[in-house]
Length: 359
Image (cartoon, rainbow, N blue to C red; front, side, top):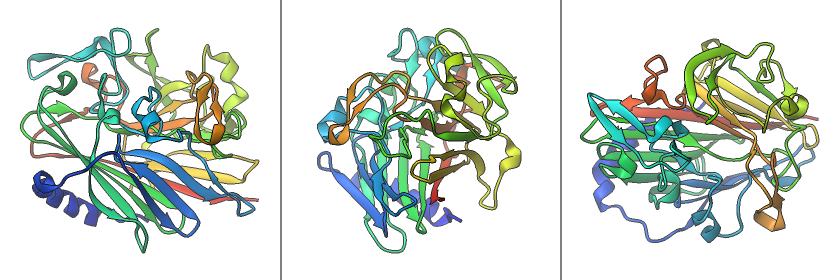
């Protein structure tokens, strides 16, 4: 079980020290424990690689990405990045808060996606703590978003910490503090997973279970209508394990939908079980738990001959994303869980990825 309380004490200390911390250029940071290793960069607080063994002990990198840091700076797919200030979509690139209407930077037609043209995935974060090995290897990134950033109100101080817990768990801890104004915050981790290995082909044969019995319905622009509907009897039903490809042809392009997570799947660590993914070829399984109310399931529908790591060429469905967080466009739907953070209240979003193998 992950113990997050020491981290939160550290976060408050980081808020006081941020002005004297500095980062110099884009760098790579590796945390490692046994055969489990994760590489990250301070550009977008991004996961570059996750290396874990398969059922035969063979190590492989199971996340999509690029060979060079420069490629990440030019990326439009959000490979491995932290996205925000508000992840997912905001309809018409605007919202009203406390009587004021805020016009945001539109970067997907008339809508805002993943924070705007220069969201948190496209900025240089500061590293305030780095422990590469030992009992609890971790790295903590911090970013201060200024008032008016992409149209959002208020100064916001954000931290993201990646920690290897035990021999098989990666924890991601995201916090944010509104410094002076209420503001929407919805951070998400946007890694593309392929448990067979990042260059093993598509993920259509991987078995997925999503612990959400409802989805937020969308309009033609992938903006929520405000309605929530059951998945039973639809291609979106992953309440029981099934392969990604089993019903994907019933959809026009693939999966890109937010699931409402069921609260009765809370474990001993008080985090809801969001999803499991299993790759029968490698025997790898990933379980995802979260404190967030939803998870966006995305099957890399828009990848097209993307040049990736180690000579790989990623095509549609080369990976899958499980982005836990608040519901899309929550700022425009009062019936959705609020994503508004006010001064004096700390935003917290926790994720646990546990990797195991089975014969």
